[in-house]
Amino acid sequence: MVDRRLAALLPEAHVAGDLGAALRYSLLAPAKRIRPLLTILAAWERHPNDLAALDAGCALEMVHTASLILDDMPAMDDTPERRGQAATHVRYGEDVAMLSAIALMNQAYATVAGMDCIDAEARCALVGILARAIGLRGLAGGQYADLRPNERHGASGITETTHLKTGVLFVAAVEMAAVVHGIDRDGSERLRRCATELGQAFQILDDLIDSRSFLASGRQEDDGKSTLLSLLGQDATHRQLQSHMDGALRDLQPDGALAGFVRSIFASVARLPEAV
Image (cartoon, rainbow, N blue to C red):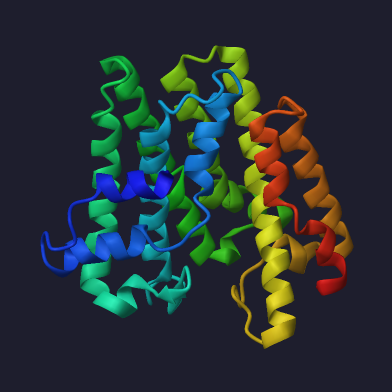
């Protein structure tokens, strides 16, 4: 459902030549769609089976994909592959990749601004959430911090960078759900706490998986970058992961769809100790 909606929100592949094709290539590549699913399922905490937040979640997926396009470029993380295929700058060139990222972020704003299922005030609030998530206290600041690891200070610096690069979009997902459905302040705060903890846990899990991949292939995904795993060691990192997982679930309905989704994300954790 999310994939179909993403495809419908984009221009046809032939529009603007390679640029239109690059947008679809990047956004519609197979992916977990965690952010739009988080948006929808956060809404289901109070409004089960309501899909009013679908477009808001799709807008976040556009922003996330735009950030990946930029992260992968030679001036950033210099990553040749993404989502099982050549990175956008490898497939279409750096010029088209940069324009694709800008176009996707613009399409995200257009998507939430055009959500006629909510009033104008709510649409403005969604635009503000996107802007904050992308800016200096969001993805842009997080990527800068990731590129300048020497400016971070120990575990607290790593945690802050993780929040800016990963957590802010998770928080934005639940904030958007709250706006679309008019969830009260207490409910919104509970969802924010969940999303903040989830962002930290998700990054730790990613680092553990990268470590496992390194032992299997000899290729380090984030070579030279500080992580909690490299700083604290495996045992302490697993304890930290469990603490964040518990925190993410603490304020959720135990049998709710969102709690089930969170648990499913970390289903592989039990297999990690012997693998890393």
